[in-house]
Image 1: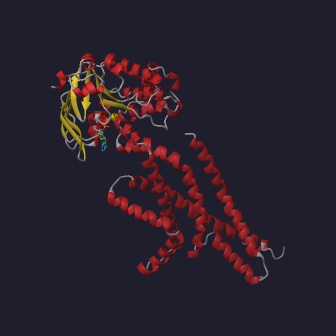
Image 2: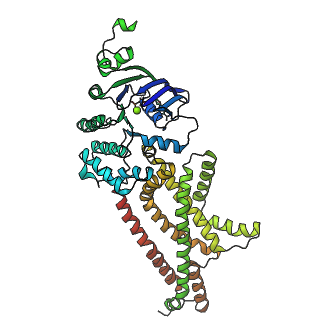
Length: 250
Length: 226
Ligand SMILES: Nc1ncnc2c1ncn2[C@@H]1O[C@H](COP(=O)(O)OP(=O)(O)OP(=O)(O)O)[C@@H](O)[C@H]1O
Ligand SMILES: [Mg+2]
């Protein structure tokens, strides 16, 4: 198992946001997390790279416990090198051009040489068709281009796992596709992807497992086929606007 | 022409230059220290450490609401009466203007940091940067770019306001002008030197501050396109 979550709990004050989460994520698989707004998807991702501290439970990366109590910043820096993240708000730093955005992590966090970092960045930008934007500033890019650069920036760190938090939510429909295509292209490279998204079609085509959350709980874990065509729970059927028949209600 | 006082001014011009030097020196030293301490204060005020925030907030208001002249007098007389220290107006001036400038810049920096979108902090951390690196590479460079126009503007206000130091006996440009006027009057009660002298002073202050004001406008234009 690449990432294992056991009995995870997280509250903000008295508001229980994640309630007894158990999840297994296999190496090289794509896990899509779905659920209504506010059900705790982002919080779950943020617990995986230490942006939120969990209240109870454990998270293991391979077999190593990464959520020991009182872990210091340096511990999380090491984990974040292995678990990258891209999120909905355009994450690029506005005062740096595309190249600088991309080589900052490799140079300052991984202490790689500038030459190596630049080579890496150039190669990645080529792959997503943005070679001509290498000296552009984020404000000069479209939303879709920014997100593709943000994905490349995460890839520059050579993570094992990448967390995507609604990376297409703020995009025009026309740009959604170009970003999703990039994510799909990562699927065959042995990377483990955890994707929060509302794009049903993408989830159906790409996911190895769908995790459906409701009100801080995981209520259904299934294959895309099963989730979209015969979901087992009332919550999932409501979410998908499917008729709720009596058999399930019992 | 006889009574205009120009000849007196020309004779005393070297002294006036010394005064100018004093004015610029106090402003420049206070300015440089203000920038250093100001950035530090701005970062400290953002640490969300309650006791520290409250103390800094109080000091900030104290320096912004109470006129620098009061601070100059309080420190100048206070140190000598209460602590029996010999007070040097020059040092006191630099202390007061440094504190004043530091809190002005500190508040600017604090405001800018707290207006930065939260995702910038998070994406820095998610990228694996530690807190020191986050400030060094992500936050401070942006703050420097954004606050530069206001900081240059502060420099002009500092230069103007330093004229107050004449009141605690520092031989700045204003103080020396006044003593030149006095001596000239004493010898020639019908002299128009007051007018001539203050006109010259007006020009001198304008000549120092105007380029700074232009610089500030220029930087503002540059920055707004970023
Ligand atoms: N820093 C925080 N402090 C307090 N409450 C929070 C915080 N972050 C999230 N919450 C609460 O936790 C709950 C889950 O939030 P979360 O952002 O994880 O939901 P989500 O499933 O990602 O929703 P969306 O689809 O809108 O992004 C919400 O009720 C939210 O109000
Ligand atoms: Mg969310």
